[in-house]
Image 1 (cartoon, rainbow, N blue to C red):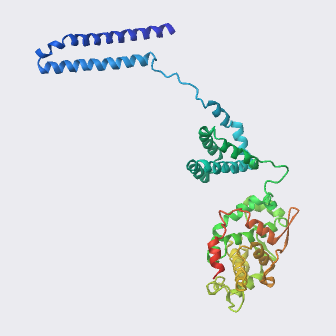
Image 2 (spheres, rainbow, N blue to C red):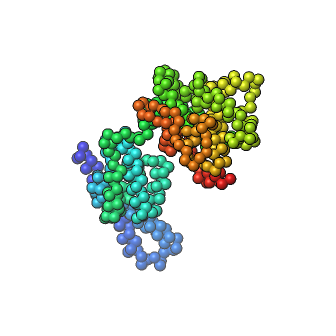
Image 3 (cartoon, rainbow, N blue to C red):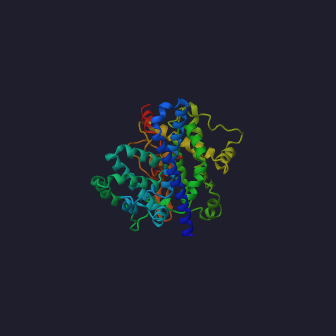
Length: 408
């Protein structure tokens, strides 16, 4: 096979060399005939220039083809001077899998990556801004680390960047040391993901109630979460059989009603406060008809509204109005509970009777046992409120709105 290929190449080379020789002969003849140009007509001169030009172009093309065919133009290439650097920065498949499969290590790496970008911004702000924009949109740690590696090719001699990163890297290195990944015990139990999924289904209903009443959806969800967690132990078997598979909220129908645990007498007080303009809990004329009954049997209608397992609108509405009325009372007395969810949740739990505005209110309420960990209703609501859980569905009230409300 090698002999055959060599023979073919030799024949092609022989043909090309012959063609080149022919073109050279023509050019030589043209040179000797140059002195006779004056004796020729312009048509003949033009024709000869065309022929010789074509021959010259053909010579160039044939030469180029021959150089390519004989691989005389090939660039042998070489190893990049940064090859050793590339070998060190590229993550192996096993390293990548280990990082993505361990949520705790991944969160630590996200924080470290964020710090690297900030450090880069001190030295090279334009590059850092581009990477930060991508990182905020995607949280793609793997790609961003490669983006930073690409930049470090030009910063290999930058001791300042390397020192800044290495000095802080230990702060973001994950080490459990037997400590829980999440400090909030209630969010570490097996029921929490189910409860999150169930509450998430109702976020549109909660949001609509929040718009009608002016109560923060975050606060409504806080008393809901505390009430639902309170029922974990008492509804253990029900949770395993129905609640977990269906990802539904627990609804009470005995002493307390509905998913938010509204008591019968509390519901009646809420209705009364809506229409009693002399009450310190009266929220205003705009709220008077929100709970108007449609039948002649208010007791039965009230029960069916709050305990409806298919539609939790009225359960949330009663809870939001309870919060609104307590908030109204305290603001009239000169106290703003906007940033005190623990106090609001405590008062929601203990009822209107114990809502007495004062400068040093106490946190408490029902004691809730979450698998051996004791919480008060107010503390549990407070921890959830500021935990950041489900903040995308139930956002925090804006500071500007709080300031305006406080000075009305």
